[in-house]
Image (cartoon, rainbow, N blue to C red):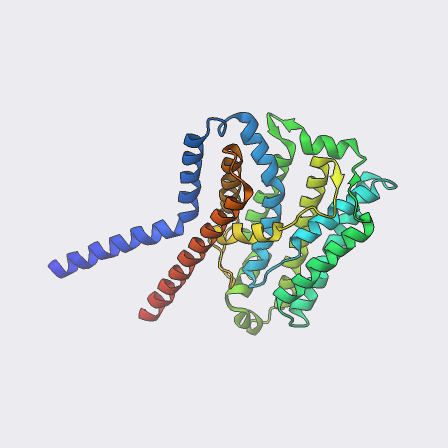
Length: 329
């Protein structure tokens, strides 16, 4: 009886530990929220919160696209450059084209760019890191060529109003991002596309043996990633009123960081949309509170790096425990 009681108590403690690790993103976010509120009286002001929400809208969209790519076991380093390309294309095309035509052409160009990346990864079996690294250079170069290295004004009042106005006290772009997140949650959990994307990352061989063409889903996630990055670029251009070839610099790293902090596995097959959203918030709050405290940007990068390392360590530890438990069975 004593042995059984000890075993049951050990199981309970292990369950508490695993529960803690599974919800580490939520815990870190809540701790950061409380600490930020205590460190600065300006943190909880409506002006700061809404400003933070506006700032985090493009990173949220980009991180969502990155999540779906990482779920397949891939990575997309080109998203920051796609942001710049879409930003420049939007400002440039609005000089001669209607808004609807401009948006269609920008998103079409982004989808084609993502499909090309996906084709090289899925069909030609090239490493995602190499393909998207080259894509990062190409997209940024295109942005510089089109803009001639100079920012260009966004000449459309509707876009400017959409990026800077509110609805029911909340920024319109935040409502838009919320709708996108809800749609992606539904796609991930309740559609064939979402299930097979996760299955490809978990065991692509099994997917192929089931007679399913995994290449379609691989190409699809790169298209999704590029389109969401392009929407982020359009929003950034609209917010600042300029399309710039320098827009989106290092945003691919922040997106990867948010996905990892959200608990997704870089080897694919595990990750959640809501957790990635919380990962974006963790990074956003770190930058926000340091700005409010007038801390230089360099320490922010140090803290971001430390959080990423901790997230990866917890992730690898959890993976090792899962393997061990499955082998014991």
